[in-house]
Structure formats: structure tokens, C-alpha cells
Amino acid sequence: MTHYRKPMDWTAEKAAQAEATLRKWYALAAEAPEGTAPSQPVVDALGDDLNTHAALSECHQLALAGDAAALRGAMQLVGLMQDDVPAWAAAPVVDLSAQAHRLAAARETAMQTKDFAQVDRLKSALIAAGVEVRMSKAGVELVPGPDFDPAKLEGLE
Image (tube, helix red, strand yellow):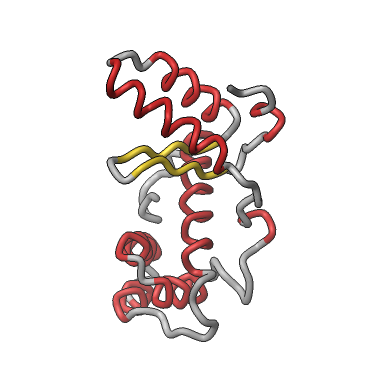
């Protein structure tokens, strides 16, 4: 996240952010077939004095655009991905649908009563368990993060 000619600003928070970004990239890139060529902007960036900062910035853009094939090719060229997603980056397999339904129902009730205490309590408990909570007009999505601990969800009502 820093240009190679500049001093690194490395903190535990930045390390966690970088890991979360890589996990998202791996999840998206895993959907693409192997052997996909990287996008030309990534090749050009690396050809320009090995500008990895620009190459990784392009990877961010590819991920935002949802271009799994180009992202996979770029990650392979940069050396971030071999044939498969590394074991550490694989998302834990867990069914959070019951918690998502519970949070969605609490949110719907709160919209009517204007009392969001239950929603806040559920959301805080999910976050404390390492779950990323995404709420929008479309609904509730729960994504287990790298620090997900299912034991912290036991007894959540």
C-alpha cells in the first residue's frame, strides 16, 4: 500500500486490512479459470521500473469491477497467487443464515418502532465473533472474517 521508494507505514491495523483485501481478492479470483492473462495496465506498471504499487492499485480496480479473470491473471503475474487459493485465505465454511434472518427481523421491527437497541446488540455480538455485517436496503449479509469464532455465537438470541 506504499510506493517502494517511500518509507513503509506498517501497523497491525494495516496488516489486517491487507489480509482482508487479499482474502477478498482470492475469493473473487478463485471463480476465474486458470491461465488467464493479466490486464495490460498491470503489465505496463510492472514494466515501469517494477511499479508494484501501480500494479496493486490496478488489482484493486479489477476487484472493484468484479473482473475475476483479469484479477487472477494479475495476481499470478505479481506472485500473489499460484494455482489455488492458499489455505489461510479460504473463508471458513459456516451457515450464518439463522443469524442473518434474526438480524433482518430485528431490523424490520426497529424500523417500525424506532428502537434499534436489539439491532445494535445483535450486530455488536456478530462483530465480536468476527463476522462482517453488511446491511443495506437489499437485506442483511453476514460474512465470516479471518478471526471468526463460532463459539461466540452460541446463545445469541
